[in-house]
Image (cartoon, rainbow, N blue to C red; front, top):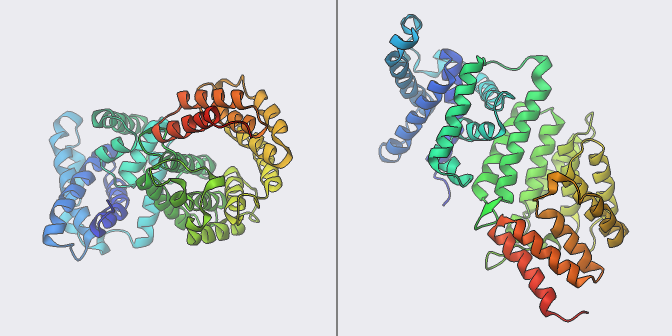
Length: 417
């Protein structure tokens, strides 16, 4: 179900309101709870009473009152009463002029992203806090996105907030020395959110359009705040170019359609044009990073008028550059497939054989699936069928399982060509 205009507005305002509260009061954990309560009140009241003239000020007022209530309740235990007594009450800064200007709100949102993606937190907590605090999703929505019980996600979020509190992390931009690592952490979290939405690891369907849309929205926000960072532009381009194929990736009955068989007329041309423009502008600006290279690969795929016209030699060369940046077994696997398409299946199979003992791929369905595809291309039907079965057994996504088993079944039923 598409989001209503009020829901879209609340998601846009959520990080601004939380940033304003944390910057003024501190106490990220309690401020985040207060903002969530304000968002719930708005979601309940605005459809009935109408959106206020100053929705951001309304949310700040309600959240600030709730925050002071929560902190005052704990003051005997935490000795916060002296701090509370010095605060300016919300009634005195309701209007926007009493807070920082709009440009500072954008800075607050970026600082909030840095805080939620701090290296002191586990990746699971980083993702959960980012989606809740910056994305404005409820705990229940985040739990549904990652197929865990709401109680489990509540504990995960609570542990993340506890970690922030115990670590004494400040609501402040990272130092120049920290900046590159912290931006990298933010981009990694957004990449993981997008990947889970585009190829969910478990569950009945293949796509989670709400997660891909949220990842793109947040990455657009980071790009707006850091317009000169080529890796931010690269990640946004990668998401747009990949998501552009989504309409053709699912068949009429919910089945997975591989790229070579997709109706490219259904790809989103506007996203492809935007993604190509982003990566074309980013590549000449300094050091080329992994997101830019992945976006360049995606652009080569998207600009090919047909699967047969794909420039696999260029894709192979880009993967070789990407391999030089990091020891990533999935990149090595994709490179092997590209080699098979540009230099022949036996060359690709030889590279895949080198990955057979990599423990990082021990339970990954992509390795036997790639091997099955290449064995099928060289006519090794029995080996291909067994590999498709192995890939299906390793997969936890039902749509992917059905696709892999269907490929195996076809090899069992069809006579050799």
